[in-house]
Image 1 (cartoon, rainbow, N blue to C red):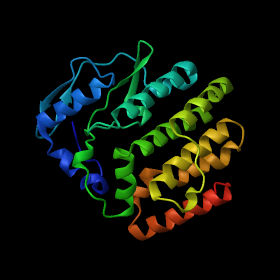
Image 2 (cartoon, rainbow, N blue to C red):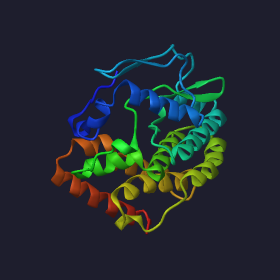
Image 3 (tube, helix red, strand yellow):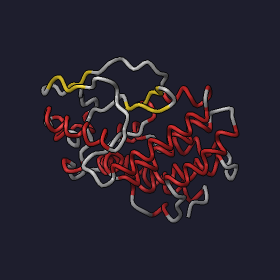
Image 4 (tube, rainbow, N blue to C red):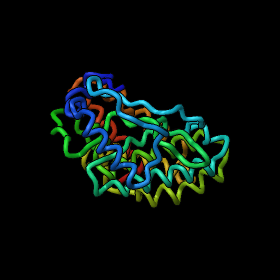
Length: 248
């Protein structure tokens, strides 16, 4: 069931809240058409509130595979990245938070399809959080960078160095390393730098602890809770941290 869980997201998701059954069904058809694997018998069952129903997915969460089957984790992230790229020319996006995926028969299944992320319904941002959140929802390069960042952060915690090394090439293919972003656009500073730094840490080019600290500093949830003045200060802290880490 679609529920705006935080007031900071409410305005940007307002159009989605009223999308209704037909728009949501079209969205699901669009993402399925590029190969996104969805749960069986996924059906829109309500307009107000917008709600879907599907069969229970008998598969572990994707994040569980980091330790148990790291090669499967890497391959799944690669496949999700292909989905994101294939959706770039469509009016649909997916949320690449790894908690939204289960693994069934060795491949990822997207189990969280709400809210439907539809670029044509995108609202103009009015504050720093909305700038960040809108890019995360709708900009393909930022979605890919977020995916790589999520995956690399998980692998930094894992015990298998072989999987980490394997993922470096995958991650750099999905979100090429960046430079010059301490003073660039906010979403690129935030998400593409996270991906770049995490991949460098996985490759042994940076120590892991400062990169983990950078992820804490760039927590979207924490940023959401700040007032606008403190958000502006946080952005400057992020830029300064990047300069300290040598991202120029």
